[in-house]
Image (cartoon, rainbow, N blue to C red):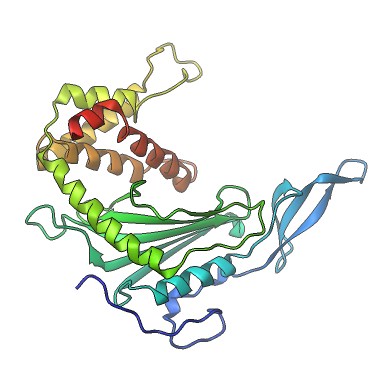
Length: 307
């Protein structure tokens, strides 16, 4: 059974020793701090009225310079709210994996909840050829992210992650507003159904053939597209030859497994957006690439082949 009604009571504070809440749901210590705003000064010692600095109240460390419209909110307030939603929804909590990432001295916090018993439709005979449901929370004190909750999935065979604009939960609170996050338990229950429906639609991609030349053209126009010529590069092609070569190598891997169809293209795209090699922050590149995957699936080539 994919969904079970959860009868656990609702709690509003999760860091103060409530024994019935799984310890994995508690906010990690390195993200459990309050933040404040303080003035910043110019070289003459005069406060800059339109700017403030976000700082950690526990260590006094500065985290970012922001506008004077910025509203501070601790991570714990949002995490407590989302934990409460999850506990009171029909999400199966018997096998939940919680993965936290805290970066830049606490300026960035990302949490992934993976509900390992809530699986999408099995694509092939291999039991790992299916996705599991996830929720991703992310927020920051350095303007990198708004306060955001997103429906997510992870394909088990290749560990590719993907969000889907057709069945996402749209919960986003910017840091220039004082309003609280508002989403009820039924939104999460509906998210399960939307996830499962999305998996049914994904299986249809297997029956949609596509030629190698069309795949290459699709990647040129979407994932490998570039709007500028990198510094010092003479070639002024409208796409990155390096990115295209990488994508075609990945496509060979997936088309060998699934044959030349849209599902192999989808797996190629999500592999490229998930498994990132960079000297910078992986999540920054993942966000940009995931947006390109969404754009690819709105392109005329994709839509024509998916019909």
